[in-house]
Length: 165
Image (cartoon, helix red, strand yellow):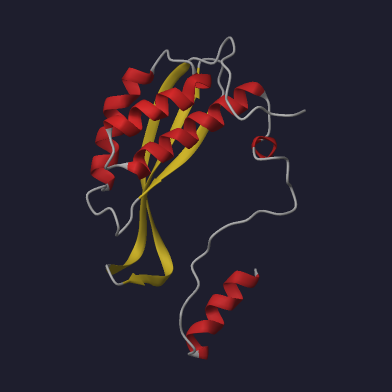
């Protein structure tokens, strides 16, 4: 089954609710950049539920690069937009997300997390796997990872051990 690159609406794909919760998780090692360091990961998990029971989740992460996009601001935006999205078609997520990007240009992580939640809820509604949307590759995926920049073996050993798992 081949997927189109653009979503289509289907009967029963209306958004019923947008729910969210803050998540704080300790990191195994401190994350440091020139902008600062942190020992905990803070994000907001957003869930979109459709009227047929389909649901999808996304993550609105926080970043040193966007210090104004705090968990509190993310939750405020999601709290405002959730009721506005109720009844809209999940298959219209490209247009919905485009409008949200215009409305919240300084909060890309919030919009991205909501986009993924809507996208995954719509995919669940259609019964199509996420891998099919991205070309059907199941055995290989390209990604970007953080690699420590050090030659100290005492620091590298735990990183390599975790990466090998």
